[in-house]
Image (tube, rainbow, N blue to C red; front, side, top):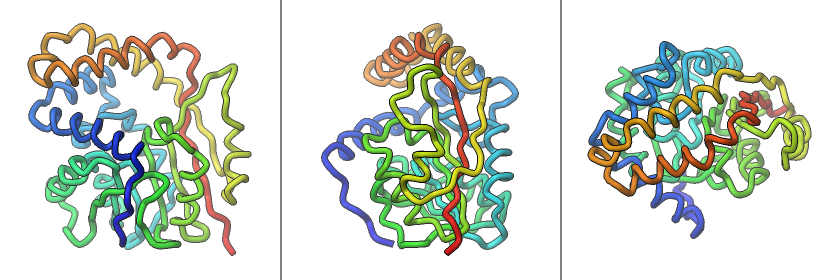
Length: 262
């Protein structure tokens, strides 16, 4: 498995996420606030900083349809929680790819926490469009909250198709405005890159969860600044101020794509 070079845009993104993961590695406040916003849907073991909750984990298990010994790719894996949880639950191998070297290092260190044998989990630096993985590598792939930040979604979907084995599936989270999306329907996006849309499931509880999270971030501003530093706290609060007002018009989805058999 190669280590692809990152573009300048991807290196800039990596620096942002390196700083975020480094700050959060020394404090539990971000996890605590996600747990508060998600309630009993929060999977504590994951230490997730994403929309990954118990319903999403269940959807991934059901839609991936993997067998023991299969190869899973966790794309935009962050610190690895979702991929490692699935590796243990499904008895599969997991390869995590993330643009942040800090996230990759933290994910590698978490492997023993999930009781996954070291030879069944590996993490490497790469991007959504340049994973560095071989052709037809994966029996299944997940990408949680990664596509929304990608500059060129088509290139990412083309890379996902390349990495998947024929017949394998990818489960991706996505969101869009309800009334005026600038992207084509998912069926067309899939068809454009040689994939098949198998399922498009709405997650109506997700936008309200983000609204609750943004509210508790604002309520705990002082603690965020004290524990994560002003730069990270300000980044979170800016996200809350800019994205919060858009949530009423957002539709959250989990999409399952399949590479056709050949």
